[in-house]
Amino acid sequence: MQTSEIALVGGSGKTGGRIIKRLEECGLTVRAASRSSARPFDWEDRSTWRGALEGAWSAYVAFQPDLAVAWAAEAIEALAKVAVECRLEHIVLLSGRGEEGAQRSEAALKASGINTTILRASWFCQNFSEGAFLDQILAGRLQLPAGEISEPFIDADDIADAAVAALTDPGHRNRTYELTGPRALTFREAVAESRGHWAADRICAGVDGGFHRRACGCRLAAGPGRSSGGALRSGARWAQFQRDGRCRRNSRPSRHRFQRICPPDRGNRTLERLTMQIILIPSLVAAAIGSGLVAGIFFAFSTFIMTAFSRIPTEQGIAAMNSINVTIVRSPFMGLFVPTAILCLVIAVLTLIDWRGGASFLMLAGAGLYIFAAFLSTIIFNVPMNDALAKVGGNGTEAVQLWTTYLRVWTWWNHVRTIASLLASAAFVRALMIV
Image 1 (cartoon, rainbow, N blue to C red):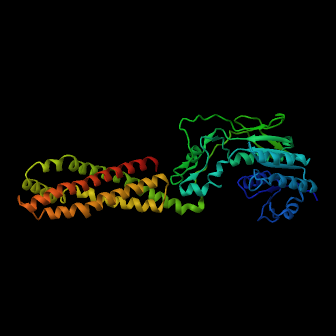
Image 2: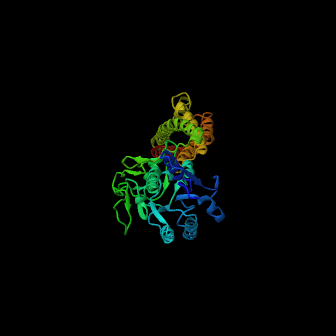
Image 3: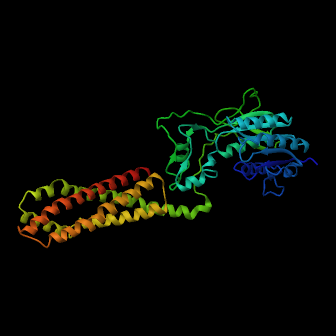
């Protein structure tokens, strides 16, 4: 028996749930058709198709996995035949813009003779917060061969509104519409719109910073070869629509809303990221300043202090160096040298816990350079030579030989820790710019 039910094939997807909610608000009877629904529908099990469609008068179809796959057109053609046999009056098909595979599926549906409405949608904003990109964004690195391509991303709520209009107003039958967002964004810009404080800090796609954005209003405009009369008008606003006096939506500006990536079931992870951010940023700032100041002190020894000591008598040079070695351990320098190493250790641990792509590499490299090449090299090489120098004095042969070796070897290792500290500071500064 034919009823006024509307079947949603793909009712559990990004658009399906939104459409069901709107149709129920309109007082219409609607049922989802998916693998887990009361009347199951499985694209790979055609024996489920008739049961899912039987009794409905109209259907919304969102093909899975994608209309671009090779077998999509044949599947849509077969579904259309079942729909005709089940006496459906109308099918609204969610399609894609500029996809040859999708156009073949559209043609197969139209050839069946059933009334159709084709909604060619651009990429969803929700792909970043609900779809395939979410896990990569949460991991901190989204990899796409996107380059400089821009896309007028559309909000799934706008698609749902268009689908409800098509399902409830017969004036939209046998028409093809293109749905786009209000402005074109590159994928890097789209990630920036959707990212929270702990979302992706990098998208692997070459993007020219001067790439021109084109303005593009959210539209549901008649496709090629179709009349635009009776269609929802192109431009920045939706037309009003009404069916049997039961459902009416006022015209409104189009959305272009990227949801902040903070899913409810990841609240603990969000708190962890926020806490780590509060610790990480100050640690990076302090480590960058500390390692930079330490590099400056080491630089002084490498460039002129040790050279000056080499030009005075051995006894005076040893006495001066020993005096510095005794004084420096009681000076504010130790309050800079050791805490900076501790901060680097903290940064390294936080980096390994929460990897953030290129920024994490810089942070780990900076921490490693300071800890191993500046701090530990001082303990392993420079300090033992200082201790040996403290045990000799005068102008004897032993003192002269030790002083000659000290000037050469100690200064060489000082060059190493100078360069390491300087590079560590630079790495921390660069990480701060992109973290």
